[in-house]
Amino acid sequence: MTAADTTTPGGLLLAGAVLVPFIGVLTGMVLGGRNVERIALATLVVGLAISIGVADAAIQSGATVVYLLGGWAPPLGIALRADGLSVVMMLAVAVVICGIGIYARADFGMPNGTSEARAPYAFWLLLLAVWGALNLVFVSGDLFTLYVALELLTFAGVPLVCLDGRAETLRAALRYLLFALFGSLLYLLGAVLLYGAYGTLDIALLGATVHPGGVALAALALMTVGLLAKTALFPLHIWLPPAHAGAPAAASAVLSALVVKGSWFLVIRLWMDAMPGAVTLPSAQLLGALGAAAIFVGNVVALRQARLKLLIAYSTIAQIGYLFLMFPIVVGLDRAHLDSGAAMSGGMLQAISHATAKAAMFMAAGLVYKVLGHDRIADLRGVAGVLPMTVVAFALGGASLIGLPPSGGFFAKWLLLSAALATAQWWWAVTMLVGGLLTSMYVFIVVVRAMAPADAGWAPASSVPRYQQWAVLGLALCSFVLGLAALLPVDIVQIGRSGVLP
Amino acid sequence: MSASTLFGMCAALLIGAGAYGLIVNAHPLRKILAFNVIGSGVFLLFGAIAHRGAAAGLGGDPVPQALLITGIVVAFSATALAVALLLRLFAASGSVSLADTPPNTPVSADGPAGE
Image (cartoon, rainbow over all chains, first blue to last red; front, side, top):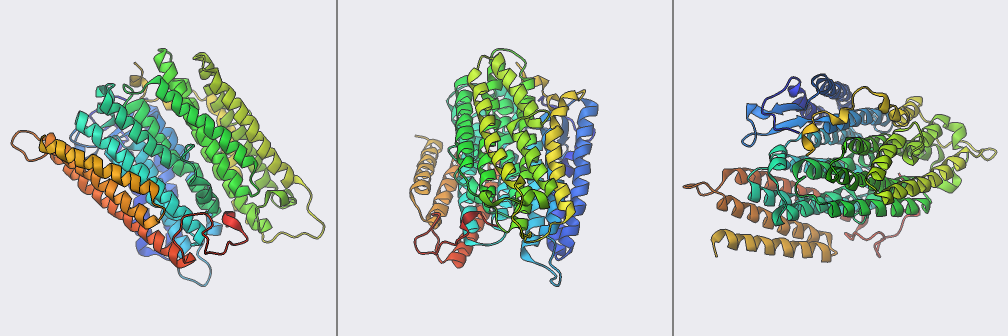
């Protein structure tokens, strides 16, 4: 990322990507009632178009899209920047949010006979708020705006946990909030230290000036730990399973697929863009080791779960571990003066394929719950007869998590594996393979149980609209065919990032 | 010892005390208060940095002051959200414990994973 000091064509779209969801939140809040859902769905369409527009602008120009707020250049002003990383994440989030929006129409439509119910009203507004906050995380060019974006994301994510207002979910939400707040304070403290030492919070300017030393290391450590608490990387993961498994299915999908990616993305910004000078290979190895521990613990605990939603939540913990394996690999390649672009693309692809697959799996679990009236894994028989598309979607999402070709998970793990071997870090390769094996065990257990024929005389507890099944299958298919991204003529992730390499 | 250093040390003390309080206290309200103590420490540190980095003739660097105001607003909203959740939790369960199964509330047969 270079410190471009002019607004580029399409720059205004970046402001739109952040503002449009929040305009939707505010108008929805004022108009209320049945208008909330309509406004939310209209905003989804506009937001998707804006994300595609940003991607188009970046691909056309082959460079970072920049927008200077008020025309003031950093360090005095604030810049919004969308490089390749931002563009792919914005696109992925837009697609997943739209899928969740279609699915949620059945669960969060305003009930007939009432003008306004609390849970739907809150859900649609929070869905848009999460989207706006995520877009702000992706395009922010300075560490303080990122702090505000992170807090917005937390404030939008926490109430999603306790939409139904039961005591267990309120407890999970409060726990999540306390973890997240402690994390943000650590992040803010690190940002303050950096400002004290370097006099700027702009990422591009910091990236050029930060040098190894006590302040930079302390700031990096504080901010990283704070962000890990929000991302739920092992051993700071204990808040995640009750929060993600207790929420309604559509909200779980938002939280598990998207919200945790926000703080993870920020770790990448910090390590790769803001402070590449202060990062050391041993610290990156430590981050990778935590990721490996998360993969083992998350997968083994997921295998022991009796309930489908908890199983999926623990599988999220394991998949978060994969996201952190890219750090030692990328830093190792940079230290060896090799091209780390492919490993970077692998990490991003892992995030995107997990986002689509996990949203599909949580929503599939929601449909299973509706049909059976419970989600005990031991009693899943008969589901495949009633919900064939949904079981296929769960299997496709699972295949992407395992890393079977041609899924996005396969291509991501392939890129990371070959990069790990290129830097002689074979232990990460072993971790990925063993993790994939454990993942395949619980995916197969669920699918096999669901395929078993139903008992005679059994009838589904309630029926499921077909468009919900299509939304789930659509997202799972997205994840499954993402591996074909290898055939694209341009590597979008690399746009505007050539300046990062030494 | 200059004023900036003194305030910086006070800030470190507040952050340390707050972090200790946040970790060792089981009661959520105490955790929320400890969060605010840490926040005050961070804001004080930012103020000290603004004072130290001031250009000649100015009382302080204005940028941290502007950021501080935002930070205080964010911390205030966070506290409000946390307290609101705590009140709802008390209304719903009659207890404010964060433990998975508080001793004085009946455990529902569904466990925490239902919808």
